[in-house]
Length: 156
Image (tube, rainbow, N blue to C red; front, side):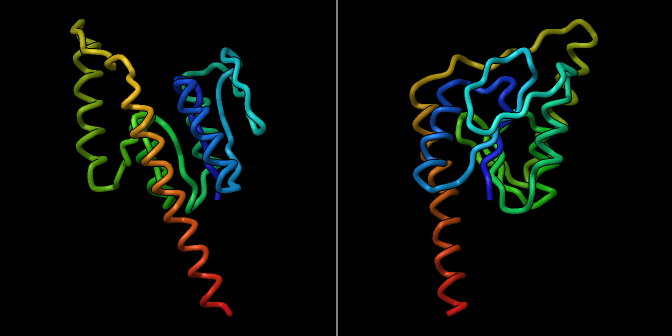
């Protein structure tokens, strides 16, 4: 298991929380971003600046059981298909049952922007977002840790 962060548009505080909790639970944290970003990470992969390069790399690196951090709904849908867990930088856990709605919403907003319309951008990040993200990530890591302990006890 590893934590994979789509770090192209990821808030610094989210990266910091991932690194802190990764150390606490002894789980590697990998960051992926284009060379346009200066990311400080023990395990960082730099990709080209193509619009989907980081997403494709995260998708290719993800495996069942990993935790992926992204705000990209398309990437979330793909990694959920690989049986990975997925969180937004605000701590929202993406689930397979909601992806069709989110992707349809993304498509409608893109169509509106292409026709000259405007959509709202994300709201300003708050401390509550950081606390919610930390709690959500810790919940997933705790669940994984408990499953690992139960699995090793069954093997004895």
